[in-house]
Length: 621
Picture 1 (spheres, rainbow, N blue to C red):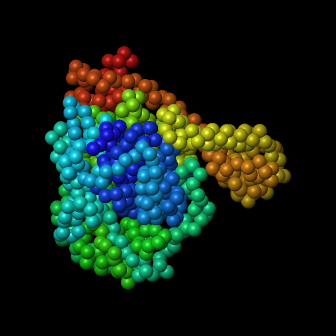
Picture 2 (cartoon, rainbow, N blue to C red):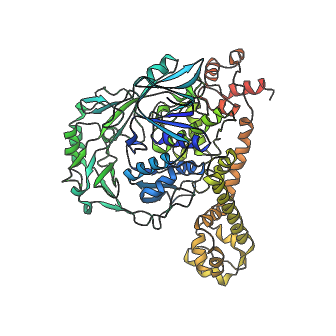
Picture 3 (tube, one colour):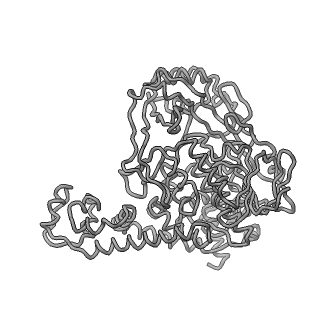
């Protein structure tokens, strides 16, 4: 009934969609298996993409020919660049999306790809022979043969939904859980665990008094995620901010005795950085209020998302508490919030390619690896799909370094350190964040996509060359052009910067912290005329390169020093048991995780600097 597919992707959430596209853009024949074709790319929680560090990931996915940035640009209703008051390493794009349009466009793009087929049914197991995956088995007992399989099951593996004292099986509200895969993987020797996440109630926007809330408009002009020619956003929708209060907290406490989180019914660990509202008021009992973001679900719906009010308390408690919040006094609830508990597999069981150690050509991506967030899932899906395709094509795998991408940081953290709670990306996790900015993801990663021969990379690479040349030309202009005191001192006084008493290069003026390239161009007609033909994106890149040149060089030096360890390779079949000078913990963890390099080995929890020295001595270094 089925041909033998190159890559089978199980699950059509953010990880599954990007995995299917990545493998298909590598020329593979792909089967995307999902329980429901109507929920492809469903935004199960907040209809938003990006945010702190997450926005950098979306831009990196786009630079590697993924579709998340393109879909977001076409369907967003608001765009904001976060952390603009800080340095460019912290700037993070975020967009509020139209939930229905986001899913619709993703499905349209997937169905339009000639290399992707679909099958709507629950996958309940894998076909494994001689330690190698050879396909999947569906609930109806059909075997779909495949050379590689990517599991992106999200929250569906033995999922249980909790609302107060009620609990029922499900992978998402209104959808059944997936059963069979966990049990088979455990039989094959995998270790499994439980995690939880949650979502807030949805409210009827027609019953909200927005005049009692703070308005939160988007940026003007709006930015975007994709480096391709996506349309600019012009008609933005506002978000709003309101706050809980002591009355709200008192109402919520009345339901604590029925809370599955407090009475022990939930065994899984929840996300530290996105706690439920009951967890917030319990852990931060000294705070009399918490900020809530009131965000639209789309242009053609009155449904509103109450960001910051995730809850698994009984429905009536949620409803009463909502109505004690400013602006929500008359609110009607579309559906209550809930918590969901699901299976995951500790990611230390993976290689840095996201292939499992126990089964050849089997890859895991997304929440099955213990992560949380659409962006974290999407980038794992992209890398798993790429590496599954490369494995089938018998090519070298793609492993991004920590100095190359936030994606590299995320995967390196998961595989080497593991995670005991849902993993979320932050800028603080990246030691080279000045190099890993949102504005230069295409310069860092599009050459890799081009080298791999990914579909669409040729046009993207041409734009990268134009961008690099433009930034170099702008930098050269500022290095060579001079400005006289009488031309610039008036401007310098207006920005509280010291006057000059002789001609100086524009480069030296731009290095001053009070000076930015936009206002300088407005003050100097010669600069304005020169910059006018260039895209604003190219001008911004040039300014960052000029202003932060010293910091960039310092981080590049650090990368070069650390790369010596990354370049020292360890054989996959290395017998660590013979190195008795290693600690017992190091021998055990190195044998289990099979690091590819000394650098990777050094980041495994439990491997000490002394253990690294033993490995270096053994390698003759």
